[in-house]
Image (cartoon, rainbow, N blue to C red; front, side, top):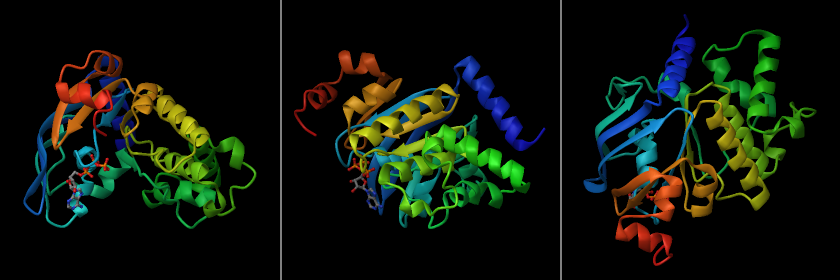
Amino acid sequence: MTKENELANATAQASASGEALVRTHDLTVSYAGNEALHPTSLSFSAGQVTALIGPSGCGKSTFLRCLNLMNREIPKCKVGGEVLYHGRNINTRKENLFELRKSIGMVFQQPTPFRKSIRDNILFAPKRHGLVRGKDECDVLVEESLRAGALWDEVKDKLDHSAMALSGGQQQRLCIARTLAMHPDVVLFDEPCSALDPISTFVVEETIRSIAEAGICAIIVTHNMEQATRTSDNTAFFYVGDMVETGPTKQLFSQPKDARLQDYLMGRFG
Ligand SMILES: Nc1ncnc2c1ncn2[C@@H]1O[C@H](COP(=O)(O)OP(=O)(O)OP(=O)(O)O)[C@@H](O)[C@H]1O
């Protein structure tokens, strides 16, 4: 069995049993000695969307970046505690980042298409990882990925055009499709709609829901509580480096326990 098939099986089993695919245990982050994230333990399951919410600077993106070890690229950033992926702690120097980011994809705030054709954006990473061979396999992957990113109908007749000619919303969906082309089991979204108009936002939100329905574990940082309500099953609220409260989104928003979350939901601070 290939490594990809093993991973897909493990994800399907985790999904069926409702067990966590990603877990943090006492995760901490400091930048040049300043603590930005206090010990945080959270779990994320396959087939579910979790929203990370909270006011600016509370540590949402810092937390998210730990899940695929992106903080490692920031000088003087120190990450403590554990990030358990399929039960294995990946917060170690030994972790192979090239391999890890194949399975834990990330979509950023600003669309980041490559200055290449739409087709080559999709095929770039799968080719580097040797996941596709020959024109037929490539064509299938391009179509499958663009369909999953809700972009196929709009671009199927211009796959060789530059990705830079797409609108911002289309570029963001291309970035999602590009991530999905690697068949990840976790996708991290860092405010994916903040640069988009309402219609593109709606399409991206629908895409996030549909990839979770397909079994992917989706984690989204958002400032927008309506977006968290529309897209997520679970929500975690952060405040000044603490993960204050977490639970099913509907319950958290209708019956917040912590006074800081109550104030945040009432718009007393933002
Ligand atoms: N690269 C960095 N170097 C130094 N400090 C950083 C860095 N990134 C974040 N921080 C600090 O860590 C804290 C948490 O920032 P982070 O970006 O994670 O918050 P956030 O909740 O995602 O904020 P926002 O919603 O504004 O994006 C802030 O005090 C921020 O200044």
